[in-house]
Length: 243
Image: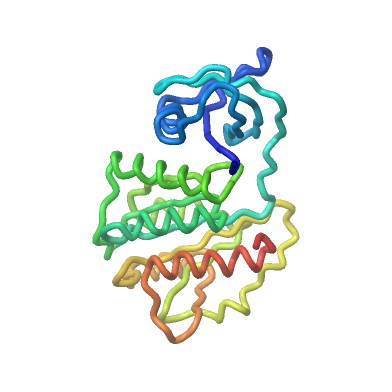
């Protein structure tokens, strides 16, 4: 039987009692979908620690697990964050699902001048569910961050000069192979920006130009925004030695 992996919250872990509780949605999945029962072995993450244990009680809304072993989750020193201008339709679902499987550490979606899509609170919750499902499927030990930002200015405010920040743009920039990734910081963070279907506006390009962000391009082919998000993330993770 394949490993059954779930996620819970740190406040639902009772370390002294060596037990933890699954939240209602995870209990429903374990009980009603996977048909797990008392005595079945499971693996549970609270994004800080990874626990292995067995189910001692289970129902559609509540599941108690006896912790047998635990280990602290090691977050990579070299982390990658995607800053994505909100695309239209279900493209954002694809970006979160595939990016999570790849190992992207966080997604920051922002409304750009040419964005055609929106992200409501309800949509954000759906994206978190997609990220959770993709984390289980890919056996990630921690889930990525998901945040919604109002505009590109809010996104730029989260970029530090100590970090490597790249905006991928089809109109200008150095070849990706020439981007310098040889930083000496122990915790190397890379943040990359992908535009919407119509690309970034001239106003946004000016904002990027006035910051410490590097402009880069891949080749002469114009990629769809969801394709660019995954391809560029893959290349960065590869350059960092994460894949």
